[in-house]
Amino acid sequence: MTIAQSLKSTVLLAILLGTLLISPTTYGNTPDFLIQDDDVVRGDPKAPITLLEYSDFTCGFCEKFFHETFPKLLSEYIETGKVRFVYRDFPRGMGSPLRAADAARCAGEQNAYWPMHDRLFNSGGQLAPDNLKQYAKELNLNGEQFSECLASHRYMKDIEKDLQDAGSLGIRGTPAFVLFPTTLPENPHLILIPGAFPYETFKEEIDKLLNLHGTSTSSLFVPVPASTHIEGA
Image 1 (tube, rainbow, N blue to C red):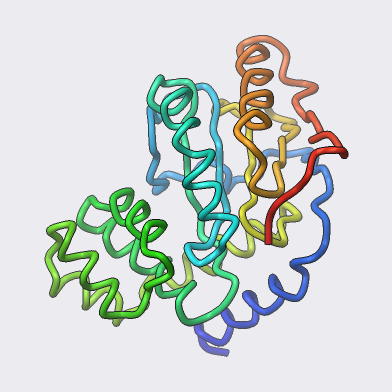
Image 2: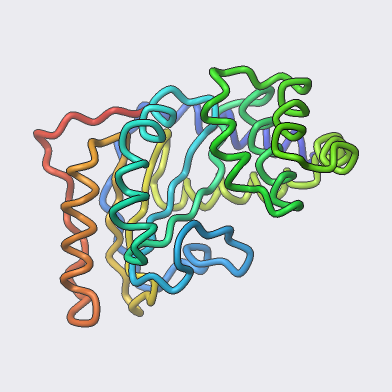
């Protein structure tokens, strides 16, 4: 099976399971993929709390989170050194979802991952190859290097791994978030936020972790109230 065929199978499985609810996840051992050496971090890499997002640049609810909730998280927690934010790819199909994920990573080769991330979520769904090359031009990237990277599909294995890692956490749709102390305890209880919840939900859970940080980490799982409306794919 080729890399492309393997990734397609993973994506299709994620789509087929997309309507399942996420269950609370408790690990006896820390998953080794929560903190990765090659993570592109927004905010202070040493911030006490990590917010990990699994997302798709073509997902409507992901765009909703980006425009409505993320700016408040950015100003209140990420830019103040309280939270480090990490984005992982969870493309829900081939074509535009995969192309956009590739584009952000290719921009990252030129130290422009986050500018491209933001541009893609402000693209209005215009994610054809020519659109992506135009965005690279707007960001003053080396067009030839960017185009070569897109054509090579060299990040397909990494994107497939993101999908598989997300699946091992019970994630089936986008956006989905994992919240945990950056210095992971040996037996982590992860806070899973399965959807584009309002800012207040993120604030509540982050504040609880901040209050617990440096003290007890044995009871970190705080389930999202069942009465809260979940928005997500």
